[in-house]
Length: 406
Ligand code: SF4
Image (tube, rainbow, N blue to C red):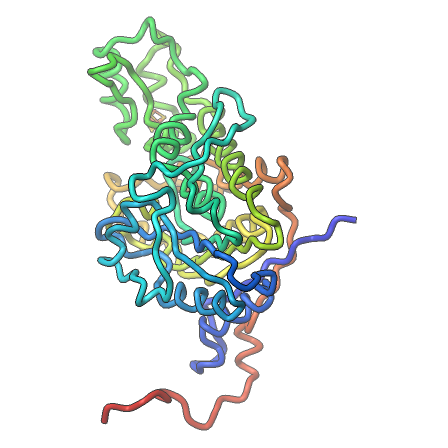
């Protein structure tokens, strides 16, 4: 009999304005339930994060990172925070330092992004991926993720954090992002720059593109919202001349490769030494790599943790679906920034309402489940719920209990 994985959830709603109901206590409880005791003394523990870029500060708050790092140290492990070299190099500007995190911050594939191991993969059109060496050197993986939107697949969660973040820049940008071009969607022989310009002109997302150097046309799938299921304006403007089409397979290939890339990283670790934590806070429409502040289009939800990557992302997506978009926020966002499906009542996931119906955020979990990475059926266990903490006796005095400067 297969066991249903447990997913632990700490909501940002508490029953009392008391420390015992704080998010910190919920995180501590989730870490306790995840059982970090499989971390052995001197184990090197990779805390894989997205540390953001430039002025993008809506990542996992260093406050929580420190808490996770201390919990790892309690087990006798040697944690290190890791991400791509650029994000690591300027992480200090976003508050992440050895002093604040409580452990070193190490570039995931070395200072020149070249410390990698070639991993062969089983997926059409791709032979191998360059997995990040510092990540593979670790004995334990803490997959510490900021859940948010993403242009290519609509959602960036636990899968994306290691599937893209666990590889060198060229693998991430050219191979994984480039897979959307694998399946052809127009006749290159019949395409001209002038014709492409016609398609570009009608597209509200500026997604059809022409490369002057290569004299080549392409669709930037990242930008395309598929006209939100309405008439595809670029396809109409093509008038069948090049057979230009907007197909599900181009979007799906990215999610399938993400599942394969995540599996390659996870297979390098002992399953008992893998922990996933998704932070559903400051949920923005686009990825942390944008390097700028963005409106939170879904209200804060909380923290979700599991040992099962399929379960943790499925549960996070279910919680996001339950929460829905913050309509008062999205109504203020101009179309130049993002287009939202005009019919918000349509039965699509919030991420599809933003990024288009063909970017089904669950696809990566389905590909992952098919490849044996976990289960989309899960048991959600809420820790320190609002009801539970509302019924708890508040302490006599609260507030500042630390040293006073007065
Ligand atoms: S389907 Fe719509 S959004 Fe996508 S490229 Fe065509 S015109 Fe642009």
